[in-house]
Image (cartoon, rainbow, N blue to C red; front, side, top):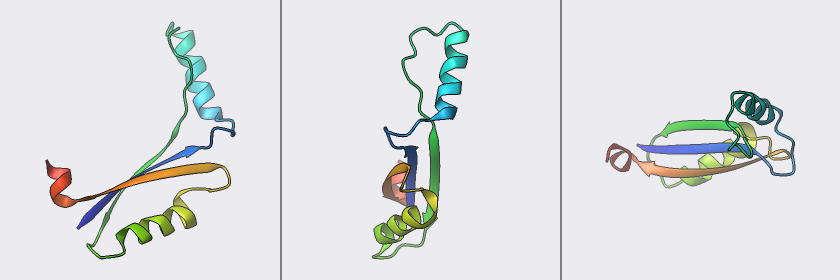
Length: 85
């Protein structure tokens, strides 16, 4: 079994309204050290072990997990043994 950890974020050129709302709330709470907040999505996907795990994750990101026009993504793939360490 393989486990993919995928992070999807708005591209830097895209306004992140949720991140801005959280930033404003943190500043109102007195956290003056906050400079920027960006929010995203995080997925952990368990897959059957195969030679095409990376290609499968790439296709999932392109087709569903990320809106590639507005979002970028990155992922790491681990074996089950690597995750348990």
